[in-house]
Image (cartoon, rainbow, N blue to C red; front, top):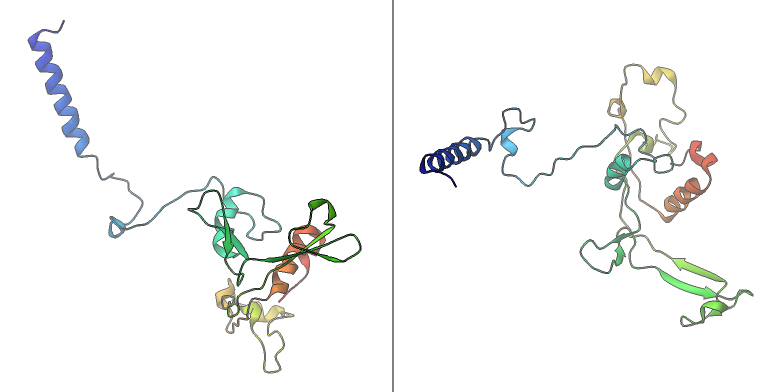
Length: 195
């Protein structure tokens, strides 16, 4: 049983702690600019520095945080629908599928699974999707790659890709996805140029 003195002391101590903690709303060592306060900004951290931003060589979840913001797949999951549902991202529509038997004959869409030997998916890419401007896409007056092959004297004073004077872009095509799938399946393809 607490005496009135102890009850008053505990009440005072709780009030003092609440008053002191109410002043802790803004940390002294906040690394983010005060101008960002109140804005809808998500700050995040990763356990280790990314080593590869190439999907064929990447192996860390930390890297896929960045890769998901660089590369756009043909299809993506709708984030709010349950059960999960695919929807087009760079694809113009959902894939169409055709089924074939072991002799190459087209089967109806409701064919028994045991009869299906091959499934063929057709994915059409949206027109007008372009790559970001980059020196790798720069062309000379004859339409040939401007920086391929790259001479050593052209690299003098260039520390990053923004140091190149010319850039270019091009439209995304289905062969870009085919090439990347082949690179994922055959690691020896990693070194080959594809522009």
